[in-house]
Amino acid sequence: MDRCVICGKEFLRVGVQKTCSPECSEEMTKRYMKDWHDRQYGNRIRECLVCGKKFESRYGRMLCSDECREEWEKIRDHNWHKKTYKPKIRICVICGKEFTGWGKAKTCSEECRIAYRKQRRKKEWENYSKSRYGEVITRYLINKLKELKDEFTYKGEKYIVEDSTESRKSWVSQDSDKKLEIGFESVNGRIKVTSVTFWEDGTVIEKLEY
Image (cartoon, rainbow, N blue to C red; front, side):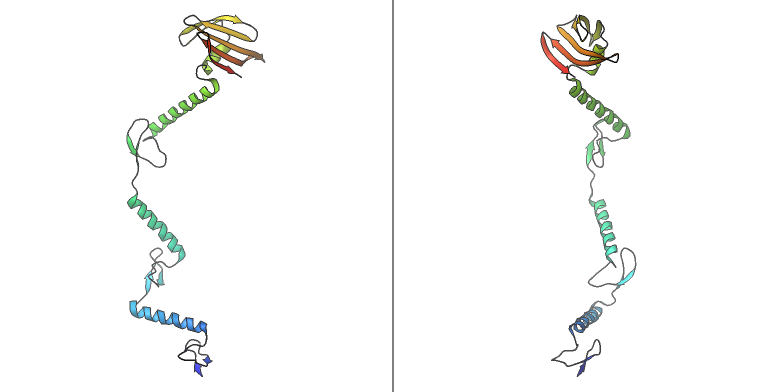
């Protein structure tokens, strides 16, 4: 009978067998590889690159745990980004000055940003006005017509009332062949517009109905 070199248990050896079971055989292999590595590479105690903790390094490991490995990847990615990142050169949409910006930046300074915001809001309002009131008939004109005056001036032209009823009123320009008409109804003493029509040279240019 032979004795297992790992657990000391007696067993019947077959050939050059030194252990009593597959588990002891696996442990013997681990110990052998550890002794071999120690002889080849000497002391394997290292300090973790992230936390500084001392640990037994195997297979060239430089980090003591999965947590430190994840942190090291973040540090490495950050350092790589700092070395390789080249900021995109942009042109300010307001003053035309070159600048480097993040994300979707379009302006180089706070002053230009405020100016750009005003410009954008103005454009958005113009688009809204066109969708709500049209290309020719504007909100300003509708407010003029809602006053129901017999005479008014719009864009340098003088308009005089041509026809008037309880629900409709029209004006003609004294300076060109233009005509304006508004359909309306009175709701609680306030004028509610139902339609606006614009003529030029006898042709309807635009008509809005509400």
